[in-house]
Image 1 (cartoon, one colour):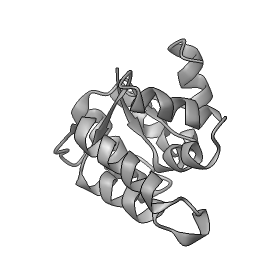
Image 2 (spheres, one colour):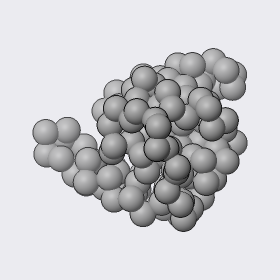
Image 3 (tube, rainbow, N blue to C red):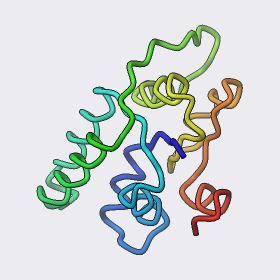
Image 4 (cartoon, rainbow, N blue to C red):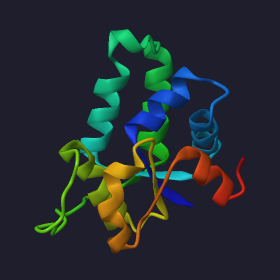
Amino acid sequence: MLIVLDTNVLVSGLLKKDSKPAKVLDQVTAAKIQVAVDQRILSEYQQVLARPKLKITAANAQAVLQYISAAGLSVIAPPLNLQDVVIQDLMDLPFAEVAVAAMAQAVVTGNAKHFLFLKGLGIEVLTPDEFLVKYELA
């Protein structure tokens, strides 16, 4: 199974060990789910996980980033033609472009409303809980 993992889910999974995002992250690190990424996404992951206020240890951040870099599907995603589409947060665009280019099953995010424009492109947008239930991983 191939997904795009929004940064908010990655952060929540690292901060809250018994949460739904942590369960998604556990499936990723157990190689049951593959994450599609590009350099923009990896850079965002790295920058966000390094924020001191999050208090994610450098060792934990590095381990997860190395795993995703090694085991993830690296994609070169062309820009999406979204001329008439409203995108709430342009920082989400790389995640959408990678999802479409990789033909991912879903974008897993805590901000599903930011990705409503993907529904017309054949990409599911699911919260961690919805994802775990739908794919019977809960």
